[in-house]
Length: 506
Image (cartoon, rainbow, N blue to C red; front, side):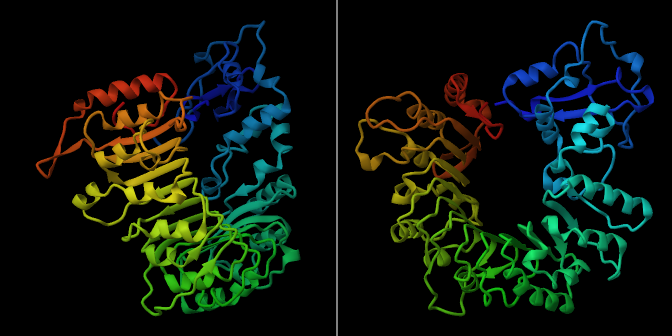
């Protein structure tokens, strides 16, 4: 796999563009095979790093400082097939969440791509996906309106993603322009106090056939805004195209009283108690993924309903999770991220009740004090039946020698002492003795092909905290004390084990 950080180059085409229009372009690509990288680093391309002055503006490149292209050399970047060049252009784009925040500028893709040469411009304009994300500032100047029209034209009918946070008059040219293109809205993020909310109150499915994702934020909040969102909720629930909704800052009072028959994923970033969460879940029969970032214990009702969600595959819970997990039946659950419940048997009960097989488990850090976390070893989770199919395990609370010894594979041991046979990815923080971690990894590396052998552990992110317990007290150890771990993990890395930069042992 090509590392994106290792293949960031600036490619100059000064031989094709006038000196005053020189453009330096950072191309980040993870496109395989490696042949593509070799072609971009070939001798017939002049490569240099993008330079910026102290004000953050691009410096004018001095063509005389660049080695000229030999007359008998061709610029292979101009001969790449359109399909391959299109994939490279896609890899130049910033992540959608970033691209929709920063303003449109000719120094960022895709406008930057159009300034290199006519061939690149033609390819860039022909790809609607390059123009599907933007961050309009909704300034209704003639220049801005013309830019928005051009952008929307080039995006064609590709689902459009944009943010809307400004408070504008109810009749605004920029707002009117974007609302006239509702038919290819795909991913919209709006503040609950923005004028766009008024327009959303009139939505019907046939008006937004491509709208898949909507996020409602709360940069400004008032009683009037909250009432508008309450009125908007049944409108959103009726949209058959809307499969994902994110609530930030304010949860509509009627959210759990309205059926959501089409919703596949919801995210709630505001406090929600267990009872509210269960009532909402039961209204979402087709839900496949749920994210609750601030779950609270419910003290209002001791008789909580049991909710069966047959299609739920991913669940992310942060907060007081035990009460909710004890009320769920999740037969299709494959991925679980959660703050560990105080009762370590909670996950075992969930697995027994649901008959589910987890492939991914992430135990998020909680608020337990340092000495409690260091003793916590997650043995109950290793022994749960639903965890025996785990392929990926991520543990944020620090683990100790006991945890890694229980993960160490014993080929001649009893079946009940062999945990997580399918584990291939592990991420953890640890307070361990030198040699404990490497012994566990080696035990899952060298015995392939033998009877009852586990899957090979191929990815390890281990943050060695350089602590040890001496007579019951945690003491700091010098990092060089981990000679054994460093040596063994280094050998395994040479054989193919992936060690991420979270590891302090390397």
